[in-house]
Length: 512
Image (cartoon, rainbow, N blue to C red; front, side, top):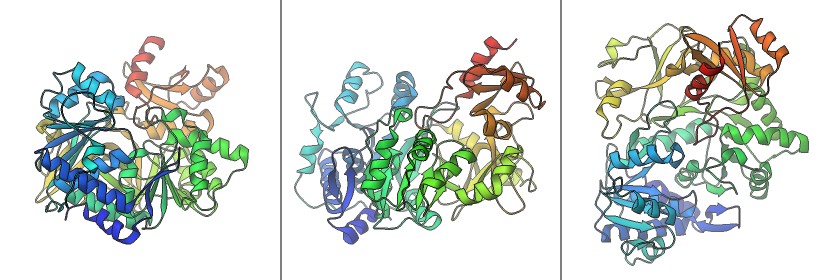
């Protein structure tokens, strides 16, 4: 059940059709070439004495090399380790030191960093260069692609480890999530059945990690001209060009991209009739942004998948339902509707607790409408954090042979079976939840953030000081303090999740 079998099937179905297109220069890699190159690289890994279960730190920019390396790892059983460098150098090095990779595949800069900080990379015994060789040992990707001889995909079962993906660390220390081949296989199936992705379609991967899924789905992945480390500076014209020029049926991006794209498209009168699914993930998405984007895709809709690194997708909802059925309830302070559970997912709402739960029988389900911690179970749900038993115990609940994951999110189920997100458990302020409070004000304030200062709720409004707006907020009696911050600090991965902890420290200095 090696997940690499999905690539073999896509190769058989699509052959010389493009698997990857770089919109910047229209360079292409076919399904045949991706399958062949990844097999050659896998054989090169084996020739370099890398064994199934060995960990390989992958520090390669989004594009053909990253996709080839990851699929080569799947084929030969080596575990690709993906860590977001945007978390900051110190945190990144700490993750590397903890995970102890046996090998490293990276661009030139990555290898230079490894030589400058040898304490974190002391476990690395084999180097792979995506580009020019900067040290005396190891192999370049070009050399491995030329490796002769056929390669047989490693035989595994659904519980065999496939990859280690680190969380972003936006609301706590970054943790290495262990993915099995069964998890990935279930994700591919869920994406097909939940969203209707199909072989032969084209996807603009404005959220670069999704380009790793496209080949498994038999979809052509168009990588737009953007800098993944500076998503907030992505030009709307670059996304529009990729969508229009390649007649994409699908496009996937972080909220920060669409916040700029939506008003640009509206001002230009731009529409994209080929697009069937415009997907947004990474942070809560305001209904007004969804309404704007729906105008740009007249023959499609806007999807906002809910999930986490540890479990994805968890729930699905479409823009039509948000605008027509749920937006008003969000404006009334009921939270953000994330839709019905995805294919194969079971959701349970339990009492809020920061303590480990050793058996699901200790966590009975709360009634519909009651806010609690969101827990999920299903084939896409991962079961542990690598070399981190404490985090695993706090976030996982055993259920016989199955495992529930505690999302760290607060929410509830309504009478119609819809799941509502109220905010992160760690960011609640007394009895107030971030999405419930912010949802009341965002429609007429722009972007806001609820934080706690000395136990009191404070609403931070993004933008310049506005006395009239401040008084209007205070008149609602929801919060007693309102302050203004010019530009919210956000996560590095999506440039969209608000760093409320950082804002809270700042607010402590200005709230008297």
